Image 1 (cartoon, rainbow, N blue to C red):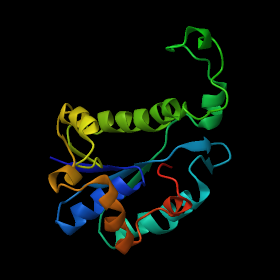
Image 2: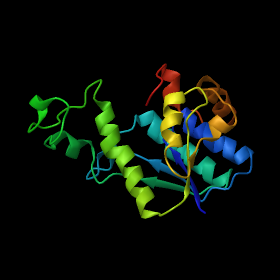
Image 3: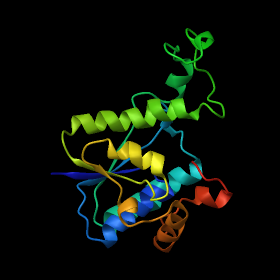
Image 4: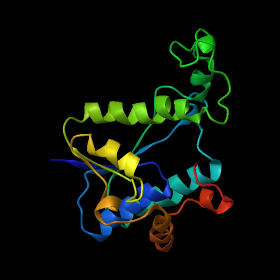
Length: 188
């Protein structure tokens, strides 16, 4: 059975990639979903420092040093498309029929869902049955509970009892900690 690691470029995903490498776990690919601001103008929606680090350093490191193939996938939607899209379903009935507009604090989940998570889910469906590795730490019980309900899915961080705070120390020696974290932020 094929095995793919879903990597967001964040510390937990990168730590999972490193754990696989250090433990000789074979991967058919490391799959990274990148949200685009504009496909037409080839502008990423990722933080510029993070995107540059990911494409210029992290991906080559994973491919050349670890020997893993990296596949970058992008949604057909981009931020601009999402901005103008009409809302069809919402917990808030007053939003139905209106444009999404600017993605504001507290609403990033919808953009992440529509442009990243759904893209990865579509990619998974196109690749048939395989084992999926996701970067969820040992101290994230709710996320792990959800993961355990998915067939052929696992977390190497859970298996190695690695806490979320410890993923920084796993990534740093390899240079696989996004510069985004040095800005004091926890999420990209």
